[in-house]
Image (cartoon, rainbow, N blue to C red; front, side, top):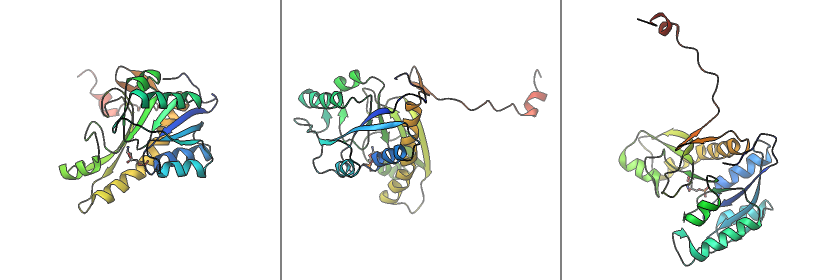
Length: 228
Ligand code: GRF
């Protein structure tokens, strides 16, 4: 993770997305309202008419379609070179995946080691992969939610930065559950990027350590029994 403090210049984030880009929007909004010390230096999509590129245009952020060919589900080989070049050209320090429907491989992971984050619509390690909210409904979990994590070589296996939970209701459909999860995503993603931008994240082994609140004093009853 890059060394930073709350007084560092704005963190240079590139966003990669394939779809609507509502999570990208949550980052744009947090930057605009001054709660995230960052700048979005590029928005790249592997889908030519993705709505996320419209958001780039609307907010005057450099945005570009970057083909993932010849692959369908990953960024490797010549596609990886295209992405690496675009990311270098915009001076990205951190990559935020926001609904990017491809797996990033070694070239990007090594160039941006511990500097690629992803938002996933489940409480990992439950339900990695696609349509996690449908998986949660089918399984019958009582809680669902979202996870922001660092990206490693596995699928949705990287160190977890933040999670937020929502209840699963008896009459939920995939759509209503996903909508409830997305409300939390739009809080979690700027919050996780804020921790990175302010240099408040430490990675130890597979764990992301966050700044702690002052320790809660022990309950008096626990002290009474001390030594018994
Ligand atoms: C989100 O649910 C995110 O968790 C998943 O893909 C979806 C993207 O939504 N990775 P959006 O494009 O940000 O609206």
